[in-house]
Structure formats: structure tokens, C-alpha cells
Length: 120
Length: 120
DNA sequence: GATCTATGTAAGATAGTGCTTACATACTCG
DNA sequence: CGAGTATGTAAGCACTATCTTACATAGATC
Image (cartoon, rainbow over all chains, first blue to last red; front, side, top):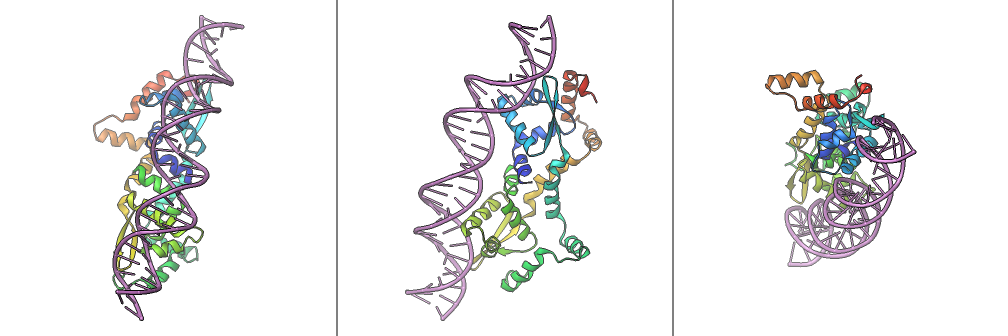
């Protein structure tokens, strides 16, 4: 997951991902979209994307066709979902699992340590 | 956006974000959650998170209280949403904006250049 | 005001990224 | 087979990240 997020933190790689989101494109075609950068540089970005599981490759004769691999973004998406999910939903989900959310412990702890200003 | 994604690519920083998602915590309290790491290291992570807009700080007497800043994850979330949105939705959205999706141009181009095998 | 507590910053070691150019590999086609 | 085409890899360089330890600063407290 760290790898996927790190990979996606680069604008060139995000652009590549958009390119191969719906279409299967050859490395050269992809490189053609980045005239300001050498072809090997793009090739290396493709390697990062492959290694982090964000794209998959398929040989096609002379060429190598790249395509987005959905599974690669699951964990990253899950993290963001977790961040956005509202507190109530998190508590509810935890209750349904019959466990107590990790966060709650620190809640109690911090409340004890906090001063007047921090209790909104 | 690059900064936010890069910041979130680090597991320590993700853990910090989860800690300050709902609660406002002092730097020391946060550092206390990472016994394997020196306090300055955590402080530096907090700086990265602040600089990338993912958290906001508030002085409270002696301490500094950190809290998640929602706005900081908007762009990153938007990118993932874009990736997950289905092709049809993208085409429709583009049509409503009376424009032609950027992707479509490369579709035509690549189709011309592709061979038999690539036309699934 | 002296001292304690909470926190940030500086300096430096080590490792990792992202380019570039030069080179290697391998399929294709006449 | 031999030239051409598509693509990856190696080496090297500048820059950036992430730790650590030592130090600086500032509010709190007695």
C-alpha cells in the first residue's frame, strides 16, 4: 500500500494511470505523451507502476501493452474511505464487529489530559 | 496534491492522521504512540503533514495541538474517484460539459496503431 | 527568576528518487 | 539472415527523505 500511494504521488505516473485506465497502451505510445521526458524515464515510471501493482503488462509481439490494474488501488482507496467515513459510522461498524474502536481508547486518554480550551 | 499523496504514502504519517482524525492531540501524545521512533522524528512527520495541508496546528499553552484538516485530502480523493468512476459516467459527464474527453483522442490514435491481438 | 516541560530545529549519516545517456535484448519484416 | 523497431537495463549524478543526537526556545510552575 505504501508503494501504491508513493507511486501515485508522482504527477507523471498519475497521468500514465489515466492513460491506461480504460485502454491498453504500448510503452512507446505512452512515452509519446511525455515529449519533455526521455523514453527511458517513462519506462522507469512504468516499472514503478508495475512493481507497485498499479498496472499490468502483456507482451504483444514487439511491444508491451500496459493497462490499469484495479486491485492496485484498493488499499489506498480504503484508507481514504476510512478517513472520510464519519465518526458515527465508525463507531457503529465497530459495535457490529463487537469490538471497541482503537481510537476510543486514545479519546478517553486525551480527554483526561486536555484542558478547558480543547473541549469544544 | 503531490505533497498530500506523498505525505500519506508513509505508514507513520497515516497512523498519525488516524490519531488526529477525530481528536485534537498534542505533539507529545502523538509521539507517545510511536515508542520505536525518536520524538524529533515524529515532530518532523508532523511538519510534513502540516506543510502538505493534511493537519492544522493550534498552540495551547505549552503544547501544540494537531488535528486533521479535511481539505487536505480533497484532491487526492478526487483523483481516486476519477480512477474508479466508470467509463460511461466519464463519457456522460464530458458530454454534459459539451466537450470531448481527452482520453478519446488517444483511443482513436492507439486503435490505429494497435494490432489484431489488442482488439479484444 | 530558576527550573521543568513540551516542542521545534540543526547538522549529519544513509538511503532512495528521478532524470539522462549509453547499451543490451528481442521481435519483425524484407 | 540482417536491418529496423520497440523496449528494458546499467551507470552515474543531483536532489530529496528519513532517521539520529545535540541544541534552542518558550510557556508553566514553584
